[in-house]
Amino acid sequence: MVAHCAHIVSASVPGYTDFFSMNKNLSLLALSQVFGFTANIITVFLSGIVGSQITSIKSLSTLPTALSVVGTAIFTILAAKIMGKIGRRLGFVFAALVSSATCLLAVFAIIQQNFILFCISHLILGLGIAFAHQYRFAAAESVEKEKVPKAISILMLAGIVSSFLGITLANYTKNLIPDHLYVGSYLLLAAFTFMPAIFFIFYKNNEKTKIDFNNKYNGRRLSEIIFQPKFLQAIIAATFAYVVMSFLMTATPLSMHVMEKMSLENTGLVLQIHVAAMFLPSLITGHLIKKFGHSNIMYIGVLFFVVTIILSLFEQSFANYMVALIFLGLGWNFLFISGTSLVVLTYKEEEKFRVQGINDLIVFSTMALASLSAGILLSLTSWATMNLICIPFLVLIVYSTFRAESLSNK
Image 1 (cartoon, rainbow, N blue to C red):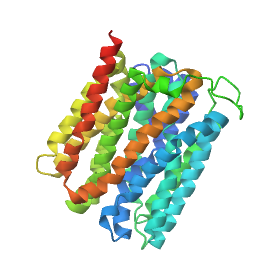
Image 2 (cartoon, rainbow, N blue to C red; image 1 turned 90 degrees about the vertical axis):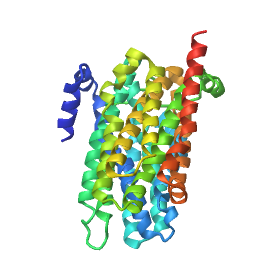
Image 3 (cartoon, rainbow, N blue to C red; image 1 turned 60 degrees about the vertical axis):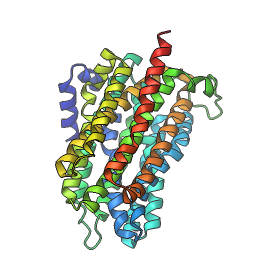
Image 4 (cartoon, one colour; image 1 turned 30 degrees about the horizontal axis):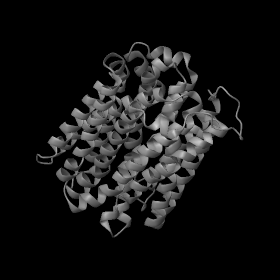
């Protein structure tokens, strides 16, 4: 199935065939994304629902989901430092093994109906997710700089396969273990997250220097890098793309399945189509960035988010959620890919691990706050209000993009 999907991707857009046939690392990263990204997908899909069943405090239902993001934020710097010391290959293998073991801890927590242990398992799962988010930087390092948007797009496309594979099979295996609903889903996740450990055995580190456990940083001061207008534009676009998307996507299963009493199948379908909308545009996003520039694609991404917010003001139906989540995914894709590919252009080779770690720390710590607040705000307000809260974030994206463009034209 994965090979078939890779063939579809490579045949759909000119130039992608060359990427897969000539770049083994990129192929391994795409395969690992297919299986490893299911940790994100299944966590968002099921952890809030499982949480609502094993805790009496319903406002804390999304806490496991949020803690996986908190864990991602906490471990981003550590992930970058570890790979700076031992290389991408060993770092990714280590992360896959930790993720798989942590999923088994979640299985035990569900069987024991232990909400605290379930939360702890998702916090630790954030470590594996933090490493997995480095896939995009590893992909960028596998190609020339002018091909970075296309390489990142390939990783995003693999997320489509991951979404449908993960949600479909998680739903199918939820009753695998009698009397223990969703245990089968997390056993499946344990198997999926283990697969990258096999793939990365064949991965070749791209670092130009030999691994040195006593290596010293020789780049610019971090403040000098961060306060570049283009870096600020990139980090703000990527950060708030994830904040808005995570804030609303985390609340979607509860809003649909728990509050609006829609079926789990319909809820899962909306999330699947949403994730497809997040990643399918990657077939052309790299080309659009190259043709129209990072800033114009960011403006379009903001416009897609605005459509999502407007739709929340109407009656909440299955069709409404579907269309709103499609535009939410499109907005995330345009903003996150343009932001990530832009930030790669703001640092030097010797600065990459430090800057990548800081980039992910900022992105996922703010995303963690969004996820933590999603369940609480949904229980206190409404779906429409949650959408309206996102407006200031869109204003910040537009302002930072306009400012960077204005300064670069002087």
